[in-house]
Length: 420
Image (cartoon, rainbow, N blue to C red; front, side, top):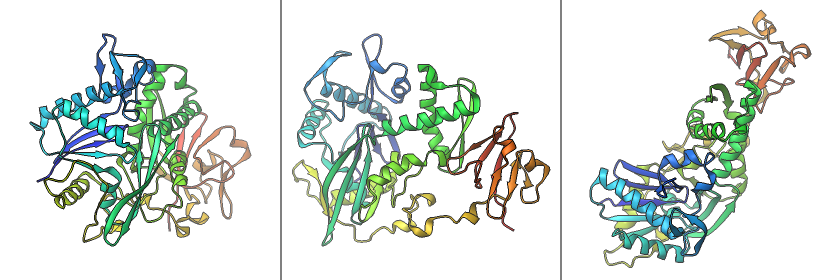
């Protein structure tokens, strides 16, 4: 029998049963009438109403009094209670009665916090049947030793999972502040705002409303950039484009934190969407459900209610190199992954879906000041103050296939390579 899974990180709380998923960010809004508001709409108010929103109550779960009044809550435990109450009410409208509930707890959740969480759930009449360590569950889906990454609001949780004589066991867990989801979103916002200024002369950071609109658009852009090199954004009527290559620095920061990590690197869903992330495995909902069923099937019904941090590895390991959950561009690189210069030198300029030769110096390429050298394409000196190069990998001196050009009269073009 499959359990209903309550998956907890401070960035998102998810309740799943089969194909039904109830997700709610770990954020709360104190409304003007004194009520607590939860759900995805809260994130759309973070920039507009920063003093009326909180994103720290799950990571700081305790009964220590809040430093300031927040919609009648005495402490973070009150906020967690109300958040879980909201999630359970939403779930019961779609799923019916919640039974056979299992909690997936992050390795960073202390024993004292876990015990407090169980007390809160008991008060809500939702005592779980089991508690699974989040890193163990994700790594079990691979069947191999390695490291699991959880992305929380203000920190990255790095947890080692060992494999010894067929037994997977959670090892050391390390918190890395400054690499959380909100931290990374803020850096993305800065890049996107710079691109907006560069292309439209409008700076969305000048007003809370425009900044919030840009902030709201970034997760959707991540989805687009999973399958495309560029994404179009619109903020307060100003339209501009961002390049995937311009955001890979986000993933690079995360990868530097685990560059020497041994074994299989598994990540959660939030991380898997970030540009520049290189990983071995990202489990989908079905994989996690199967892993939880397998782990719980080995435990007796009278087993004590404590965090499960060790289990038998699955008898058949997952071939992560062939995993359907793995994006083609997100494997961890080796030396053979580095592209050669020749493979990125553009041969044509694409304007309104029509390709024109650069090497043959077509009038269209000359109108952007493009010059084809023996091993590079560049912009002539006369056009460098007229043509904008949208790429972190390209410059006026060295253009690569995939970068976009913007001319000061409003015309734009994409550089491509056509193999003969």
